[in-house]
Picture 1 (cartoon, rainbow, N blue to C red):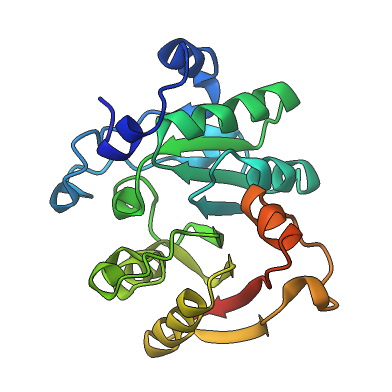
Picture 2: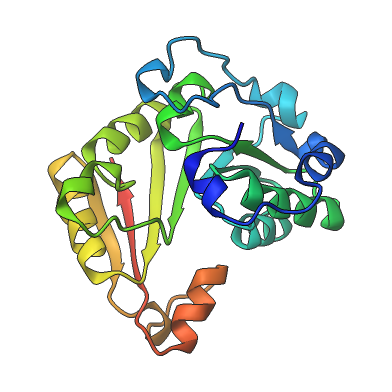
Length: 228
C-alpha cells in the first residue's frame, strides 16, 4: 500500500519487482497504515548482531533519500553497521539498489517513519544518528513533524547509547535555529556548530544529493553535533 506522499510521486516502473530483487537489504516493516498511535505497540526488535553477523557499532540515518550518504559511509567505515530509514518506497528502492551494486555487507534499509523506530530498534543500541537535510516543515503548525522536535528527541534518547551523538545538516536557517533551541531545551549539549560548513575547516564531510545541489547554488550548509 502506498502512502499519500508516494501516490503524489510518479510510481517507479516495476517497483515491487525491484524491491523484491534487493530484499536482502530491506528490513520488512509492518507500518503501512501510518497510524502513529500504533507505533511501538507491537515491537519487532531487531537483533543487530544476528542481522549483521557481528557486534560492530550501529549508525542510524533517518531520512536516507536515495542512499548516497549511507552507502558512502558504509564504504568508508566497513567496521560500522548502518541502518538507513526512508519512508517512501519509490525512493528507498534506489538506495537498496545502490547498496546492492556496491555489494555492501554492512548496511540495511528500513521503510518506515521515525515514529516507528522504538518498535524496531532496541533501547540504547545506537552509537550515531545522522539527520541529513530533513524536511524543515516551515509552517509553525507542522513543527511537531520536524525531526528535531521534542517527540523525536525523546525517541532518540531511548535508542541512543550513553556516548552516542546526533549529527544534523540542513540548508534551512530557520529549521537549524529551531533545532538548536529544541536540542538545548531537551538535555542535549551542542558543539562543532557550523553556519557555513563548506567554508569551514571541517574534514571528512560526505555530501548528500541535496547538499551538492544546495552548495552548487551557493547556499550555506548548517551543521551541528549533539550529545546527551
